Amino acid sequence: MEIEGRNGTPASCTTPVAPGMKVRTVSDKLRKLRRGVMELYISDHPLDCLTCSANGNCELQDAAGEVGLREVRYGYEGENHLGAAVDASNPYFNYDPSKCIVCRAACGPARRCREPSP
Image 1: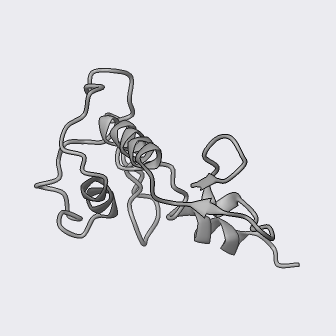
Image 2: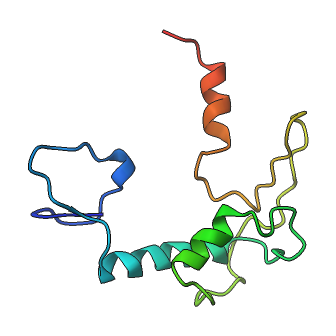
Image 3: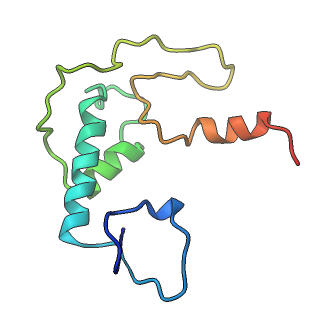
């Protein structure tokens, strides 16, 4: 997002609301930024959408479509974690690091369950 009178593009999920704050969530600058971030995620993601069990029900595919991403400028040859081993030690889900974009959605609730309540 962009906040009138401030530099940068802070994350909306971590920016406290303040009285009189004027926020813009749609602009050419933000579209370009979102597309660039999505390109980076996709450049370090396996190209197996057609055979992936989440195909057609994938938040990453949806987000890439929303920003209009059709190709990646960065290539796929750089350092990545595509060959990392899948962790199948959890009885409820397998953790595939090649599919993780570090959003914390999968590990957040589990981590909170392990932390003691106040």
